[in-house]
Image (cartoon, rainbow, N blue to C red; front, side, top):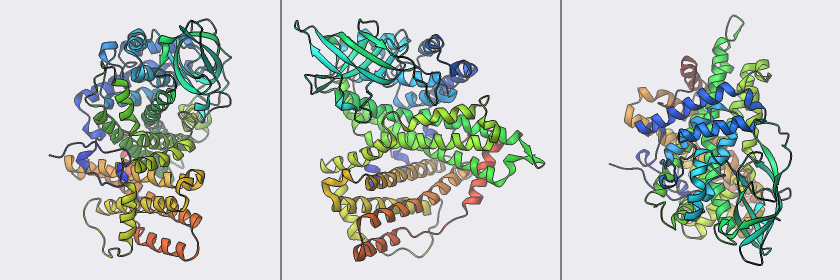
Amino acid sequence: MVKEKLFKGGEFLITDALPEEVFTPEDFTKEHRLIGKSAEEFALGEIEPRREELEEVNPELIKSLLRKAGELGFLSTDIPEIYGGAELDHISCVLVMERIMLGISAFDISYGAHTGIGSLPIVLFGTPEQKKKYLPKLCTGEMIGAFALTESEHGSDALTSEATAVLSEDGKYYILNGQKQFITNAGFADLILTYAQVDGTKFTGFIVERKWTGVSVDEEEKKMGVHGSSTRSVIFQDVKVPIENVLGEIGRGHVVALNTLNIGRYKLAPATLGGAKLLISEGVKYAKNRIQFGRPICEFGLIKHKIAEMVIKTYVTESMVYRTAGLLDLALEGIDPTKEDAGEKTGEALRKYALECSINKNFGSEVLDYVADECVQIMGGYGYIQDYKAEGAYRDSRINRIWEGTNEINRLLIVDMLMRSALKGELPLLEEIKKVTGELLSYRPAMSEEEGILEKERKMVGMAKKMGLLTAGAATQKYMDRLGNEQEIVALIADIIIEIFAMESAFLRTLKKIQKEGEEKSRIQIAATQVYINDSFPRVDMMARQLFAAISEGEELRTQLMGLKKLARYTPINTIALRRKVADSIIAAARYNLTKT
C-alpha cells in the first residue's frame, strides 16, 4: 500500500504525486474530528456571541477569551508537553486554527498572533531555560505574546532594522533602543519578541517583558478593519535585556524571524479558510430567504454562479492547506522537543517548505477577499450594513494580503526559493527544464479525448507543469542572476506556480476520495475540480504567453508560442452546468459541505 510521501519543497512542479501520497481532509482521524469540533464549538459558543463587543478594543475581554482558549488547550497546540503544551500533530494544529477562525473577530487576530508569531520563536529557537520560563505561561494565557519586527521605515525590508542593542559594560545586559510599528497585541501583551542590530550589523532576536523599565506603547492605531484588535507602536528606551533573553544566536536573528514568518504565513491559510466557510454559510442562508420576483434569489443563475465560485475556491484552498499540513507533519516526525537541537531541526524542516507556505498564504488570503466581496454582493444593501457579518468580514479580510509579508513580496519569494533550491542541487529543476524543452520539439498533441474520471484534468495539470517549467527556464536563460530585478516576470512565474499547486491539490484530493468512496459520493467534488482546472488552465496559458511576449520577439517568440500551443490544447467543458450542480448541493445544505466533519 502506498503511504503519504515526504516530497521535497517545490517538488510538485517536477513530480506527479499519487493520490495516496498526499494528505487530504478526508483522511482526518476520529481524534482530528473531535479536536476540530471542540475548536468550532468554542468559536461559535464563546466568540461569536461577543462579535459586537469585539468591534471595539477591549483588552480584558480578549484576555479572558484567550485564557478560556488556554484552558481548552487551544493556545498550546504547537508547544511540547514538557512545557505544558498539548503537542498536537500539525494536522490538528491546522484544524484548530481553521475552526477557531469561524468567529471572524478581533479575538481571531489576537489568537493568531499569540499562538503563532508571538510564541513560536521561543518554541523553535528558545533555550531550554527560556522555554521553561515562558512557554507554560503562554500556554495558559497568563502571558500574552506579541511579535515586534516592523519599523516605520522598514516593513518588507525588516532585516535592515534601525533598533539597536548594545552590550552593557558588565556584560550582563543588552541595552535596547528603538521603535516598532503596527504590532498586534501591543496594548496588552506581556511578552514581546523583537529584533535589533547588535554592533550595528548583527541582526538579533530578543525576548522582552512588557513590565521592564523603558518599554512603552503608543496610542491605538485607527484601522480599516479588525477594529477590536490592539495595534500599537512599541517603544524601547534604554531597556536592559538580560543576555539570557537573547533569542537564538547573536547575528542570526534572520533565522528566527524568517522561519517564524514561514510558519506564520502558512497558518494564515487555514485562518482564511475558516472565514471563507462561515461567509459561504452566511451568503447562502441569506440567498435562500431573500425573495425577489416571486422566488428566492438562490434560484437565479448568477447567484448560483457566485455561490459555486465561492465554494470551489474554498475547496481548492482546503485541499492545498491540508496537503501542506501533511508534508509538514512528515517533515517534523522524529524531532525530540527535549533536545538542544530541536529548534534548529524544526526550523530546517520548515525552511524546506517555505515555498508552499508562501503559496498557501497568497492563495488563501486572496480567496477570502473574493468570498467576502461576493458575500456582500449576494446580500446587496444588507451586506453593506454593519449589523451583518459580511460588512465587517469585507473590511477585516483585507489585512491578510499585507501582513506576514505582502502578497507581492511572497510572489517574489516563491520564485527566489525555487531557484535557490535548484542552484543548491536540492531540486533537479534545471535538468527537468532542459528535458521538457527537448521533448517539445518532437511532441505531438493527441487528437482524441481522454477517457475516464478526471483523466482530462490529469493531463491538463501535467501540461500546466510543462508550461511552468518552460516559462521559468526561458526567463532564467534570458536574465540569469538578474531575474530578481524583473519583478513583473517573476510575478507571472509565481502565479503559474501557484495555479499548478492549486490545480493539482484539488485533483489529487478528489481522486483520492473517488478511490475511497466511489464516484457517486464524490460527484460535487468532481464538479468543483473540473471547473477549477478548466478555468485555471487557460489562465496558465495566458500568463505564459504574456511572459514570452515580454522576454522575446520575432522568430524566437513565434517558436516559443508554437511550442506553448502544443501544450495548451484542450476542449472546453460545460462549466455552467457543473457550477449549478455545486451550487445546488450547497444551497440544499445551507453551508459548505464538501468536507466530512
